[in-house]
Figure (cartoon, rainbow, N blue to C red):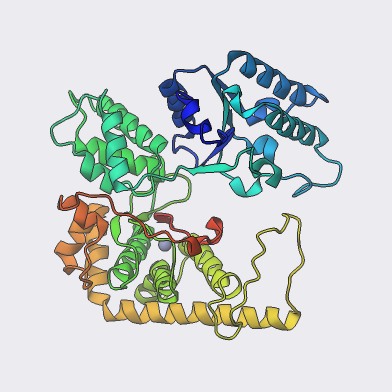
Amino acid sequence: MKTPAKFTKLGGKIPKGALLVGPPGTGKTLLAKAVAGEAAVPFFSLSGSDFVEMFVGVGAARVRDLFKQAKEKAPCIVFIDEIDAIGRSRGRGQMPGANDERENTLNSLLVEMDGFATDSGVIILAATNRPDVLDSALLRPGRFDRQISIDKPDVVGREAIFKVHLKPIKLDASVDPKKLSAQTPGFAGAEIANVCNEAALIAARRDKKAVDMQDFQDAIDRVIGGLEKKTKIISPEEKKIVAFHEAGHAVAGWYLEHADPLVKVSIVPRGVAALGYAQYLPKEQFLYQTDQLMDEMCMTFGGRAAEDIVFGKISTGALSDLERITKMAYSIVTVYGMNAQIGNMSFYDSKASEYNFNKPYSDATAEKIDKEVKGIIDGAYERTKALLLKHRAELDILAKELLEKEILFQADLERLIGKRPFEKLTTYQQFTNGSMDKKEEPAATPEAEVPKEELPKTEEETKS
Ligand code: ZN
């Protein structure tokens, strides 16, 4: 926008639009605003839902209005937030005849984008967290043909974001942005801002002069698990079950080579359903091999297996664990073609509409799939039980300590049951030792394009 001639003099055309793609809270809107600020041009911002109205033609008229204004003020930047509200692919995931109005709005957006010349100086930025549902016409060359991916920050990025949000806060000397960023894997910028604010509020409530590390710990717990329920009455028996359940996850993960390293485990009751949680540090990883998936599954089984071993009875506390395991097992067999009996087949259909109930395989295959999935899950459970029986002593130690302290960090585990038997330093250790200077680059290859939501979840906490 500053020197358009530099790019057009060789005959190139300046792109009209770019799509900012990323999960909520990663700062897409802030980035668009910053771009406009940097270029020192006017900035028009609208949300996709602003165009969606009950009245016929209003949305399309608003699009025309917006572009008319933009052309008058050119050069400028138009920013459309949540573009999926209007840009959803036409004729997909809806009943016939429904929502014609939205389609009209989308059509007029396409027409307007084609209508203005590339030298008009208007650049359109749009943000979405669902690029997969967008109409392919929107993504064609000359429209939003550039996708800028804005992912959740890694450990180095989080430290930088913490430093920004810590600035206005009165800090105690104990507060270390490095440690904070290591304890908040998977947090987006908005959540980090939330942690800083919560910490300040917690410290104020405790009548402190400055915000210290303990306030930040409590704020992180609160953002992950919801409000601490001091009044929630849990019987000692239940508390014991929760302690062994979470200790089971921790021990299983400790002795499985490919499991994500544990950050902390807590049995402070929080929120609606979570009686405890274990927080892990997910690796920056895009490809998973079978043994890695199996280790992940075993770690998730750690809770139920521990209950089974210790009490000889199982509880409903493993619901979300089991949900995750079942999804993983079905993905292994039907999505990633990683099962020998079913073979190198994937029944995943990236083009399928939301109302597609047809299964692309026969009943006989369906039966085989169910059998294989059950085999995988049963195998993983037996393996987990065997592992925990082998480390029964460690399980008891951790559960006992959890009942006393309620929260255990990775360092506590090392103190209680020794170092993890796998040589590789975790990112967490590298980082807390201060030995990590440069940013780790995930090895992304073009082959790594796996549909994101189908990947085994890398979510950091398993609520149970
Ligand atoms: Zn669990």
